[in-house]
Each structure stands twice: as structure tokens, then as C-alpha cells.
Length: 486
Image: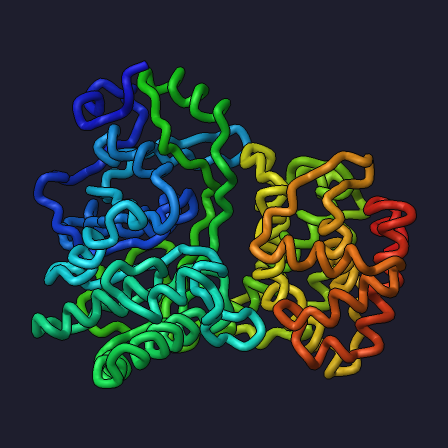
């Protein structure tokens, strides 16, 4: 079938929203690292809104730091793609035109550095997932044993990591007499701006201490919080959209109506006049904490418990009364650890989250959320548990979610069906568990794994007892039985 492109844009059905600006007049003011589905349904849409409002400085050059998959989807389509917003029976289709080029960094690292160092580049955004920062989840330090980071520590002639590309580009900007860009992490990391800044400064200092000093003095790494549910696109989604459009769109994304981007008011250069969905604020941490501990914490629990029970989608898990009770119980526990800003009504936020989880048209897969759990648990669940324990409070629902993650590492669900444990530490965790002959030994093996579990929790008797209790139930009777007991 003919692909979506600039040439086929005019022939789309009348109800399809098209770019409301001249794409040939757009200047690329943003470089994005990690162009996955989430970016295309979130940050890219915000910059597309800026273009639609008449500020043509905010086009996007995107880059994949891993594979050519998205480039091969987008470039034959002139980088156009459809965003489907689904809510119940309603569906709106909008063509996004903000991206002008997709680079593949491993194929040509030298092409990405000039794009980052270009005078028109004012903002660099990142969605490289937690593991893309090459930071130890527990300490925040560079993982110097990582082969890609080790290569960047040795030389930045052909960077391999996100921090490496930023340092190489900032060095080029400094040499050319240009100011630094604002680097905005859009990943679910606590204090993501500070972590990105620390990674960049640490790497820069190893190559040129004066460069590190310049970045520290002149650069900007605002904290952010991003929120939008973006399920993975399926072949059926692409086929259904092709029937609607009359052309094929291999880069389409599907999402919900809700969009939120909270950004710390810390920029070192121009920025768009951000519109709907964006809040620039002096303090992001309270927003970030609420999102990580409520939305993301619940999502992880739903993913592992639902996945173990053989349930494919979030809304299907929440069709079980015992699962809804679990989510509400987890939120009850997590809510006591929050310091919400005055603008955030936590009770209303919880109601809104449940409605978003219940949206059946999203088809949000539990196995998609279950990916990279070792990178996500510290901020989504373990930090909340530590706060509750330090206050002398219970951790029943929270510890059930962690125990479900431990059980997930076995690679088999409650029906005996195998699943892939998609996690950068999967092999290391599996090796530890393989030598553990009992439930208690498996819990102790996980607690001793300091790449995931911080020291203050590893030695906590109450946390250990809770994990042993729940893991024993999960192993003997399964996830649904554990939910029923909760």
C-alpha cells in the first residue's frame, strides 16, 4: 500500500487533522534522543503545537541511539505520522509534522554531534529509558563497567551513549563560541535533571575539566515530569488506520487524551511559549514524586500481578474487584509519603488515574509495562516502602507489588506459560535466584542485590518478612490468590 507522505497528505479524509504550518519554513530548534512511541505522542506533540501557533523555531531532529527501526518507519513517510487519541468509542486522528529527520547514532555518530551543536539547536530532550543514562539506580554514579560508557570515557570521537553525545556536542559548541543548549530528561527518573547533569559533568570532567566547569556554569538541566499512557502499536492498529486513511502509516502512535509535562523553570536559552498540557514551575519534585509513586507504582504492580495471572491488558486486570482493591490500597499507602503541591488534588488525581487505567481502547499490555523492572522499582516502589517503614507504617500492598516482580523473574506465569524477562539485569538476577532453593533464600538473594535494593531496605526485617510472606503465596497459589488475600 502507498505510504503516508507529503505527497499523499492532501488526499487524506477530511476529518484527519493535518499540520497547520508550512513544513518547509520550519527550523530545527530541538534535537531528541530516543525517538520511541512515547516521545512521538508527548514532547513531539508539544513542539508541533508551537509550530501550529506560529513559532517555527521548534522543529525536531530525532535520533535513535540503538536501532534503525523508527528511522525506517518514518523517513519513507517524510517523517509524518499519525497520533490516534482514543477515549472510549471516540477517536481523533492528527498528523504530526514536527520531525524533519531521524538519525541512527550507531550507524553514523558523526552526524548526530553536528545536529546537537548547530546554532539553531536550543533544546535537547531525551527519552532513552532509565538504562540509557548509564547510571547506577542505587547511587546515581556512572556505571564505568558498561562497555558503551567505557568507550566514551576513553574517547568521544564517536560517542555511544546519551551522556557521551551531549558532552561531545557541548564541547563543539564551546569551541565554536556558542552557548550550551538546555538538556531536558523526559524519563521516569527521580531528580532526572540533576542525574543527567551529574552524568554529563562527570563524563566531561574526565575529558576536559574546563569544559565541565563551563557546562556547570552556563548549561541548564531542568527537572521534569512527563505523563501520558502510550501503549505499543500493533500490526492490527496499523492495518485499521490504513483502512481509515487510505495510505499506510508504519510510524503511527496511539494514546489517551490526558497529557502532562511539568518542567522546572531553568532554561539557558530560548524556549517555546508552551501551551496546553505544559506547566513551568519552580519545583517539579512534588509532581514527579506523586506520578512515580501513584501512577507508575500502580502500573508496575498491575503489570507483574496481571502478567503472572495471564492477563494481557491493564483494563482487564482492573476488571477484577480484588485488583482494584490492590490499586486503591497501594495508593493509600503511597499517598502518606507525598508532599503534593497546592495545585494537585490527590483524591481527584487518583480518580482520574483509575479512569485512565480503565480505558479499554488503549489496549495497554501488562508485558510492556513489565519491561526493565530492575531500573524502575527503586523509584516506583522501593523509595515509597522506605518512607513508609521510616514512619512506622505498613507496606502490605507495596510489598506485594515487589514480591510479584521477584516472582516474575522466574520466567513462567501462574499457568505454567513461559515469558521473557525483558530487563538489562535479567541474567544477573536469574543467576542469583538459581542458587536459592527456598522462598526465604530467594528473597535474601534479591535483598542482597545492591544494584536494585538500597542498603536501608536490604537489612530491614519488616520488609524481608513481608516479601517472604507474599512470595510464598505467589509461588504456591498464584497472583489472584495473593490479591484475594490482600
